[in-house]
Length: 510
Ligand code: HEM
Image 1 (cartoon, rainbow, N blue to C red):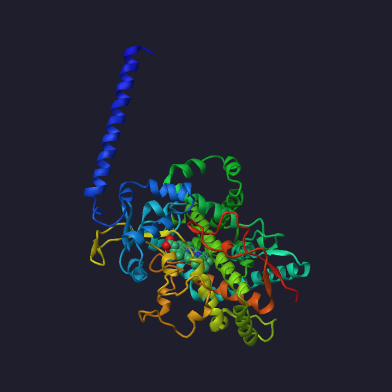
Image 2 (image 1 turned 90 degrees about the vertical axis):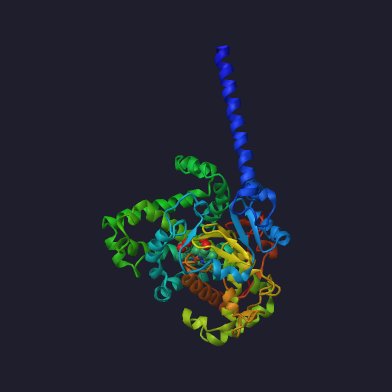
């Protein structure tokens, strides 16, 4: 290269590096002294950049949530945890932040952590969210789920048959995987009349459990480096699957959703759907009155992927949490068994969800399962359009403010010994120490406009499955201890230690 040209190139590069350094210095000064959140408590490094979050969540794998808890110990209940976001740790503030009143936006950056904005879950704007969620809500109403009970029961019956098989053969049952297989079968059936027979897999190995957990974990990376999913998901699927083998089942599922959505639109599914015992969620959405742009096949496929993923692991993990504690604690097992035997005298008669809900000890077990499994473990930022006041601090409108469900579920003032499974704490309309109903702090499903769509479905599955198993079987844990259950990584959803083999049981002889 000509000397003059190479000198010019070096000078240009040096000038660019100098300008970038100046920009960074300016940015640091702005964030520390002139940013609207500059006066809020928190460490200086957190005010400057997101790199500490990258370190804790990407390098150390899902540890930032614990770091945020440490920050609260040092700086109090409101902390600036990254340059543009405040985090609050105060159970009494939960209903104020996660409100149904007025406009509540999600934080665009975080809502897109799965690399897609097509679902209600991933929609930042309150306006568009209301349209998407408005179409889904009636399909998951209490009445709809009451009507769906037979469908749920058919799947539970398959699970019960499988438990009998493990019992007869004296084999070790990976029960958390069995529960995920159950919740997968239910949600796929309801959404698409579809089944991959996950409940009939010998060890429930081929199910959506692993792909969903892999996607959850990967979302910590895509949150920090949004270009990574853009590259990964634009490669031919065969290459992505070579890099991430768990994704194979997820891609198959998305392909099936896409095909069925297209087939329904062109009337090709008519015969199949007419024979079905129930209408499906996506049949209803396609025939319903969503605006045409919202019925775009890619958009509906994105919605379907999230509804299914949200329905599988959350409920599966809550069931595993309940099963672990009930099996691990004989008096709890005995009380639950006695209540179920008294209510269900003939084991061949299957009680309805509404009958089961009336059993106080079972209801307490369900509440403890949801509380102790947290639903999602990630912090949930919201942007309110008005200034928000917290303990004398005035938070500017549209500031991302987050809280974490784990902080409320494990609040020891409200739930003394929070990591002890105690169904009794929910019996007899109990109060928190401040005189408020304890129900107010039952927030595993979130609150406000963005709370869980599947709460009724999940509650029905939890009551009906726990009743079917603990009315009829007795179990013992197999090489499983509390470390197979307790939160060790925040991968959006809770994850125990990485080398855990899950919750495994042996079914005691009849
Ligand atoms: C024990 C079971 C479950 C728990 C604890 C749970 C918990 C939650 C929580 C905390 C959220 C709020 C997340 C956020 O703020 O971004 C949520 C949202 C959601 N859940 Fe659930 N969930 C459960 C089961 C289900 C089931 C069975 C479905 C199936 C339909 C489902 C579908 C959804 C959807 C679609 C959203 C996003 C709602 C929106 O953004 O409008 N969940 N869930």
